Structures are given as structure tokens and as C-alpha cells.
Image 1 (spheres, rainbow, N blue to C red):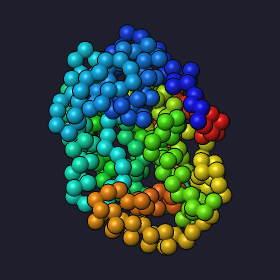
Image 2: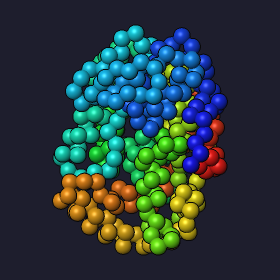
Image 3: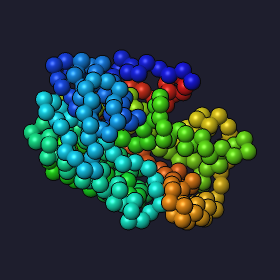
Image 4: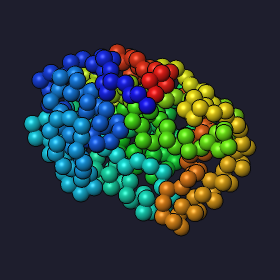
Length: 311
């Protein structure tokens, strides 16, 4: 696969960051690493915080579950460190996610003091919406998984501290280790099986997320949805990623399979091959209203078609 330049020219749309020292948490991950490179390309001196080194700048160790981050000498904090995934439900998973997404957030906010904090959340904090109407930032919260619930709890801390909170949906892009590989594993017998009929959905290119992270230093505190400009169709996206035709399976059949998969995963203490949350993600339309971010001057520049042309 041929990858595009790590940081396209569009990534500097948030303005030059020359003279700023920017702390990026979770910089060893997919989104955090891209954001760290984007900040460096915009002229910032980058400080990467996490258990593993980031791709650029100064490296400072931080275990979000137990230690306070060292933000000495930094001017702006971009917080992307998070516990992610879809483990079997239970108290152990909830506690593990809370240790990073809530307790780690509390440590970060205390260390940040008066610094501006850009806190990257997720559309997984929203309750499922009825129909295909666009979801605004005032939509009720209520994540369906340990990830969604603890991100919502972490958000509350961040918002109360005056942070800017970004809510992307299903982030994809070069080097994506989560969304696209999971879709490709759904191929069976030369086709990909999807539950129920086609649905509309929002996706967020990692380039668009990174651009929002850089621009948001000038935004008012509060939550902002961040997504690509097009409203995509599930079947078209999955078919393009997998390179095979899409076939529909009745939702009750897939839900039953997810129940069995979840029971097996709980016994084996591993992530389910097919979870109830994954079924809901594939059957519930999630379209984000991004007007609040646009009112701040942000515009998404990348689309899924751009990504596929370089994949």
C-alpha cells in the first residue's frame, strides 16, 4: 500500500504554531501520532507524553493510570491518550477504561492548570438517535460500552475545566489499526456480510481530526462534532474497503451470533470477534452535525475517496 505524505498541506489550515510548545498525549497511537506530526509540521515544538515514544519531538513518559503528566514548559495540551476497544462487558473492563479515560483525564487537567486543553472524545458518547437525523452537540449522552461511558465521564471533567472537546466518528486514514482492519475481517466466501439494510453515516478522516486539533486552540470552550463533509453510505464504504460485494443478513441472526461471540469472549477473557456494540454500529445511522465547528472557521478537506485513491 502506498501511503500519502504523513502530514498533507491541508494540515496547516489551523494556522502556524511557531513558537508554541505543544504537549500531545497518546502520541504513540494512530490519531495521537498523526496529530503530533501535524503540530510539528505547523512549526510547534512537540512534547509527546505516553508509555511509548511518539513520532516527533521530545519524549516524556506518562502512565495515565497512575502518574501525573509532566507539562513543564508547554503552552497547549492536545489530549488523545485513551483506552479504546470493545472488550466483553463487565466490571474489569469498566475499571480498566475508567483508569485511563476518567482518572487519567483528572490527572491531566490538574497538571494543565491554566493551559488550553483540546480533549479528543468520540461520537461513541452519544445515545443512539432515532432515524437518520443529524446529531448535534446537545444530543443526549449515554455510551453503550465501557469506552463510550468512560469517554462521556471524562468529557464532563474536561468541559467543567473549560476545555475544548472534539467528537469525531470512526476515524480512518493511513496506518489505521482499528476500523479498516476490522471491516476486512468480515469478508466471507468472496463477499462481506452486513446486518440489515444500508444506512447513512459520518466518518472522520484523521487529517480532518488533526486539523481541528490545531485550529481548536482558538475556539471557545465546549463540545464540537468533527466529521468529513460527505454523508457516506455504509455499504459503499465497506464494499470499497473490502473489495468484494456486500450481502445483507437479517439483524436478529447477527445479534444472536454476537451474543454467542460475547459469551465465548467472556470465558476466554478476550475481545469478541463480533460484539453487540459492533452490530449496533453497523445498523444505527450516525450522522454528525458539524455546524458548531464550521462556525469557528473549520472546514474538513479530506474525504474517504481521497483516502482510497492513495490506499
